[in-house]
Length: 136
Image (cartoon, rainbow, N blue to C red; front, side, top):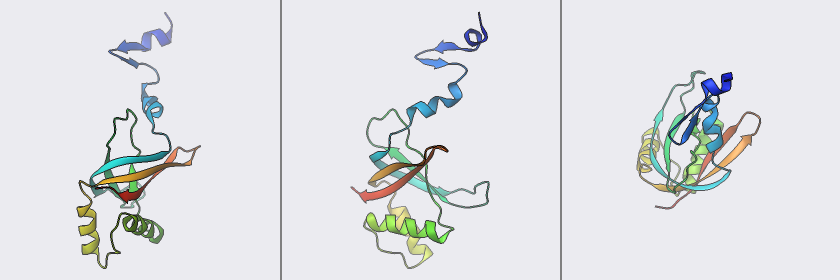
């Protein structure tokens, strides 16, 4: 019996072995458009001390693949403008204050929206998720 046989074993329907740590890479969504529900958002500090919005989104169709994480880097001017354009495409006016901005984001909770998933750097595996339009 070789090392692979010892470390690899079947557990139910799922193969558990040497490569189980990369299993998610085989379940990535293809680039394209998807319908999601906005479950919420939060601001998490990153290892680079940034504080982006991390969106909680759920795929509405029965996909076995997982939606990549969506972040909005609102600390930078470019990232803030990108989110404002996305909000405009969802039908929201440009907020006039941080309070109005937060109200708009809170009103998105529970909404059904169409998003696009695009691979922006194949070597590094960077995936971008953009809000396209609000459906409900």
